[in-house]
Image 1: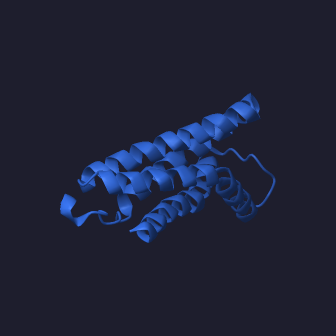
Image 2: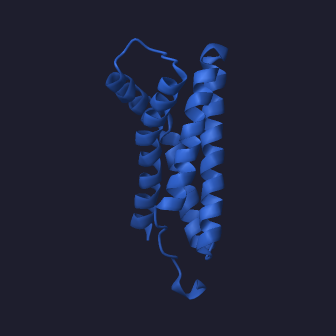
Length: 139
């Protein structure tokens, strides 16, 4: 079961890391706002690397939470709800911590990254199949 918890957590994390920059770029193109003179593929690579680095600790906490939820909650719907809320809170805490360090000039672009990231995390929690319950007698 431990391997499947790791796989589920990695799928959720990697989905957010890879899809959030695409959504951010799409939204900035639609709004006509360009933060950078870099070409769009370079912006994607930079945002993806930053997203991966800044969310590593969040991914570890999400992995631990996934293990606890899978072990202690038997109802699959309730598991997905709990993991979605945990993922959303962890994402919010991460963005709040970094925006408070970065400061107001980049706070608006931080919010523009937070929304697609939160959507990706919650969507991935619902999209990917949860690991089986650790104790088959709990069903």
